[in-house]
Length: 155
Image 1: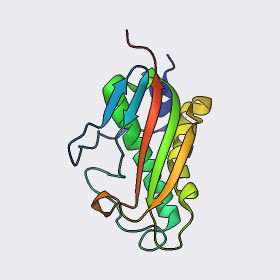
Image 2: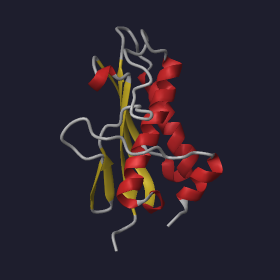
Image 3: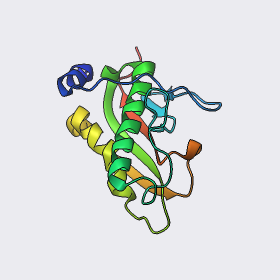
Image 4: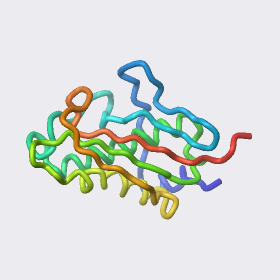
């Protein structure tokens, strides 16, 4: 196992508390060697720091930072379930961007999460990805990210 927790410390990154689900689901679930997270909103200390559509109420630059927070929240969910040091590879990232009409910068927004995974996991953070524009997200959030990670086999 790689000591990703040491890498987080080296980067000065502290994982937040796991975001409490807003409906009937769990933050992360494991099947075999894969952990799937629920869609993570950019909650910070129990609050959404911004609401509205990207390209309107929320700038693309702010949305990219919010996507990074979604990524941190996803890592917190993985850590709570199996421990961050159990991660072998980030396999897939799916990002949803609440987009104002005509906004087409979804890939750049979701780079906020993708770049975080690269910082933390290096080559093991390279992943397949979808960045999708949507008309609405829960709680009027501007962005939502979910991930699939490969983890070490269960003992």
